[in-house]
Length: 115
Length: 112
Image 1: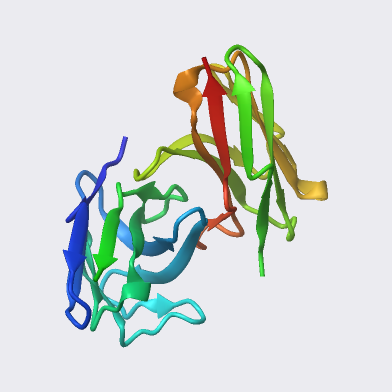
Image 2: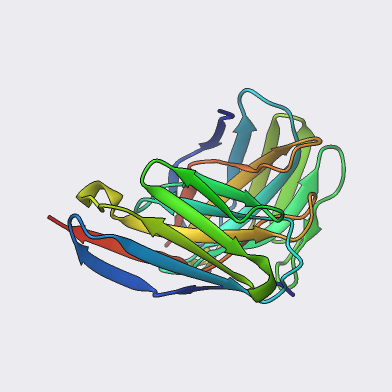
């Protein structure tokens, strides 16, 4: 099956710093990438949708200037959490979808802890 | 806006028992519905995907049903095992291009 990787798998950073999370589709071209956030004991909440080469579309309540998403190629999308704060601590999961297909393939997630 | 609800939030059963997890969604005009498994601190494993035109899907000890008109799906797990312990997430897609909308999940514990 299709594989999506995320790097890093976990990261600890100081408040005020920026953190970049990479999401790669290893064996397919992800025309669309989705970024989700999951707080403890909560469900996955969609943050944004990005199509390769286009600006991301953010869900209501998600600050686009704080969560920078780049989808420059069909196999790589990045999420940068700028000026991270403790409340940004969460589990971030990306998902890639090949063009013309309906199935989303999920990465293993990145756990972010902001001190 | 589509909302997905899963009941119960947590469930603990003895090994060998059959069990049912419930999922409901507010907008019955869905494209498909998918059940996932999530182990603690891990990503998602897709279990079953049901298209809107289908009534059920089976994989091994798992059977998922879909009643689109009533906005409900169930995941049936037969002869549960301790290895089935995980959080089970239900997610729906409204159209082929829209992202999955998730429920909060049911945390299942199967006791040996």
